[in-house]
Image (cartoon, rainbow, N blue to C red; front, side, top):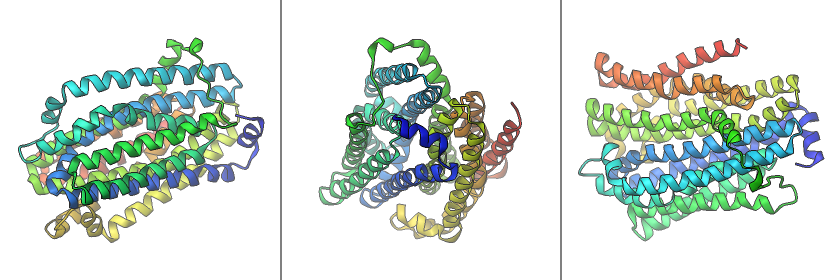
Length: 439
């Protein structure tokens, strides 16, 4: 990072500095969301409801892979940004090198294990006779491409923290648009079904990573791979700081699994179709809200390392405002036109519009509390308060929704399951506010 960039991070007005990072983050997350909507819509219309269900069955594995990439990428890049704020470039190089080596090691292990046990995993995730073949078709290619699911979030995190957010935005937009175009070609023109859908996704992720990697060939690149600086002690710090990011992604896999089982048990296949729509909009919601935190993180981390407490507070407040505004806009779409969201994903959606609209409005009613928890989880992580970030991730991501998913329908009937998410978010937001008041 050159001296001019360092000066801007420490001297430019916090609100203007944040805006420079927010716009690329918003654009990247918007196109990620657009890709998710389009990808699911094309599977729903081009393969059918069984294809949509098969996709939903495999989503937990997608979450597991991304959770590892985010754990190493966010955990490592935050530590690197703080080290640079302290002026310790050798420590920053050690963090990057150690993180990258561990990422490829983990990817190799996951690739081998997931390919060996693919059939057992598909059965465990709830596949049935009418969708198992489609889930296996999707999963075979997915498991061979594990490294790309790890690498994309890793590269985005480090390149952004190396003061190149615009490149990350370009990589995200290009990869996602290519995915959409290939989805259409593979599914509707070549009629490749689930094979076409996952192939488009793999190519999109690969393109994303390649564009981020071009940062290494620019004059502003300060990411140095130095094998002599590989340090297991550094890895421990990286993983500890990235634990909340891992938990957020990984727990979504557990929650989706439990939701699938409970919805199927109490509401049957129609409920599972509605949940597949909800689950894909959840990804959109989290992606867009997280854009506010992703924009703030490198700025907060660097200024925290430099001891600029006042700037950290100013950046934190500006980012919170952005997160709340984004969440309100997303919920407005659910309140005004939920049937449009349903029709985007499901062919012949008339039978799902009434019950689906009610379910969407209830499920997302806690979205502002979700914004508070997600944003401050990122902020805690940015200033190396990993324990607090982990508590937030554990509560909202795993413990509360899992308990509520199991208990609510047992006591109040199947439709009460849609209350699990807003109740979990409300309780977590209350705990988050308490954590803000503790040292």
